[in-house]
Length: 227
Image (cartoon, rainbow, N blue to C red; front, side):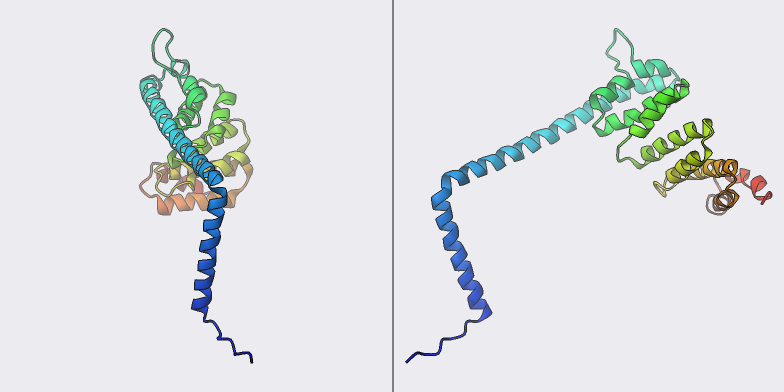
């Protein structure tokens, strides 16, 4: 006579499965331990490679920062061509070389902004636009600068629609950027050039109410009286 089997609880089922998994794991390890050792070795090598790469990137970024700091006096003093090319016969590396050698690092990305600014100040707008567009760093101030730099070039070329969009986008990168009212003001002026008066009016009013102490706040009233 067959006896009625006891119904296993969920806990007992889990325990049985755990035991089964344990024995299967032990058996797999015994059969494949050489492969397991190889796999562990590969993982360790991969992790070490990542470690070396991160340290390399850190060193590269540090080098880029040092070279960028050395060239900033030239940029600040308006010696834009020397800032771009560096000084021959010296250890002073120009912005172009810094971007070329360290462009994938954060400081190398920052160098792109100063390189673009330098070209813009020299009237080389194609080169300036190239590096403004190429900026891919994470520093919000420079993200906004790259957008505004592009906007200025498009505005100069009378592509006011594109310029307005880029200035507006620059003003929205960070709430803490002190240049936001300036970007909004420029966006509004470019919207006026395209006939988008409502968009311009909204921006002028935002500046008037939200940025009362900004330099451009005093300029918007004369535009608002025209609406």
